[in-house]
Image (cartoon, rainbow, N blue to C red):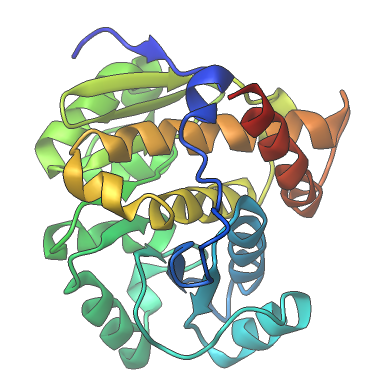
Length: 273
């Protein structure tokens, strides 16, 4: 698994779920999200926005009061009641040290389910509590903290550390960077679609939402194929990067601009597939 294979737009196109005429909002995939906090309420908005624009039948958002109000103001189609889901996104815009008891309970309930889980910033400590398959989405500093090493060590060889983390933690790892390395289940992929302008606050929150949507819409494939989660993670990175390029046009952009560019980006990939 030492050689990373580049994951391209053509590869990603094969992992976009296109709804059939017979689909409804439940069969298209339901994504649960436990994200955002009083400190970082915007993370919840960005993740939900990106997930919905990537394509799911429903997003169930479960979070504190202030982020919930912001999510509903921006995306009134989000559902704020608990229920059955095909995947979870947990931890964006959270600090594990300041989680309240209600949030801890919601996380424990989610981790006890057998569906796939995307763990982001404030939830990497939950890796060993998972019942279903897990993908984590750290940047260099976060992975360094998880593994107990220095950031410069991760930066010096991110590919090798992505593999090390996947093997040590028993999860799929999406290691964010200008080149995104994905390792897990015996495969290793690298995505190179992101522009340098994407190094901006909120980008990771949106990526988690994109990935969550892809995981929710491919739950059957994940259950049947242990490598599917890594391919979906690489696909999320490609979509995220291509939408950023579209939003940028060679200049700066906001993460809501990126989210707005996702449907057109996905439409182009579907057409080429």
